[in-house]
Image (cartoon, rainbow, N blue to C red; front, side, top):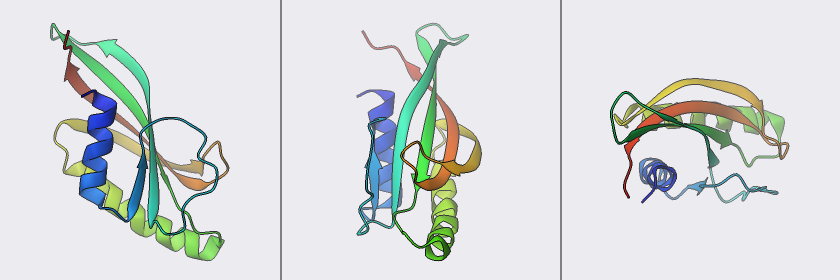
Length: 123
């Protein structure tokens, strides 16, 4: 299993089935209002490390909110931000550096996390 799928699985396990996790950078269109939050991730960088046989991998992870109302959306987004930070902090195999408030390319409000993990090259 690759690092991207491992990250998607770990986020879904940590956040539970009320979140949708989209493990690729496809256009997501309308968000499912039955979900509390939506996570989308994309690997953005791969680089060698000082450890032979290992790669550093950087990911952009978007936390999006399916609520249409700005008032409801901001409250839910704040609550979900806390949940995602807690989930990421519990994953000792990655490092997240920041979460920046922004607008996803599909127009949804959210937070964009930058995180890095190191993985072993498996032939």
